[in-house]
Structure formats: C-alpha cells, structure tokens
Image 1: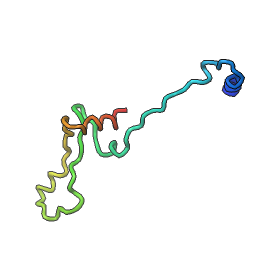
Image 2 (image 1 turned 90 degrees about the vertical axis):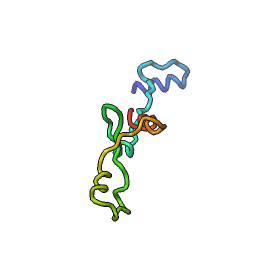
Image 3 (image 1 turned 180 degrees about the vertical axis):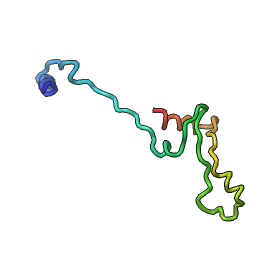
Image 4 (image 1 turned 135 degrees about the horizontal axis):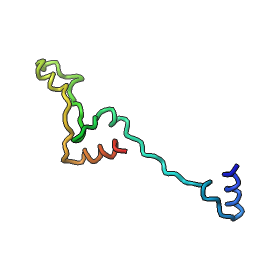
Length: 89
C-alpha cells in the first residue's frame, strides 16, 4: 500500500517518500560454463587439458595419462582478464 501511495503521489506531482522507491542494481551472475571448466586456486586458475574425447586411439597409455592433469591458466594474454570477469563476481 505504501508503494501505491508513493506512485499516486508521483502522478499528482508530490515528491515520493525516500524509502519506498529505492532502485536496486541487478547483481552480476557468474558465467556458468566457465565456472564448470575452471578451478580458482591461490595463484590463479586451473583448467583441464583437451584431447581426451576422440582421435586418440594411437596414443600410448603414458601419453594419454598426461592429458588428465590440470594445467595453470597463463597470466599473459587476454584470457585471464576475461576469466576473472566471468568468475569473480
């Protein structure tokens, strides 16, 4: 009811009560696909290496195991800055 009274006051030309018409900014949301692919660590971000899904039938078991490790996201280039924008909300 207080909101309707304030809106009616705006149409008539009266100033609204300050507490009733507070505009809030929408919250930023984290990028969900980036949140599933990257892990935040103390020094930066880690990602999984690609190349495990198909086309690896000729790999030896030891070279195939190397694709299972986590890799550090490099600090040079624009990828880290974009990743921080996606995840640090």
